[in-house]
Length: 118
Image 1 (cartoon, rainbow, N blue to C red):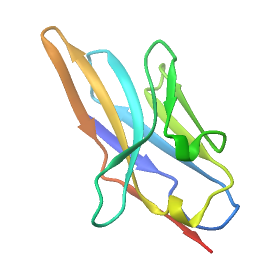
Image 2 (image 1 turned 45 degrees about the vertical axis):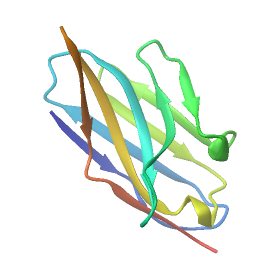
Image 3 (image 1 turned 90 degrees about the horizontal axis):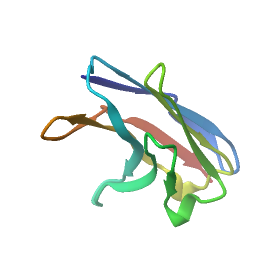
């Protein structure tokens, strides 16, 4: 299974970016997909996630600014980030959880850098 993110970059405070994540190679159902972020010296944290039932979950720090969406036909995940702040600067990782008969398997992308300048 391959997980590939794209769309990161440098943006000014108040700007917007859209991250994309393509998952390929899985023949098993993808249940949960999500975005996490990490800055040096800190733990990776959940930004937003969505289940196959379309329920969504957001970190308090991004509610009202970020929107997660998925395309189950193309196994693609998106994160629309608006009103970006310097504290949103991090490496953003895409996560996909695949269900096999006896357990779940977690897959991660390589990460994409988001830098918000003040």
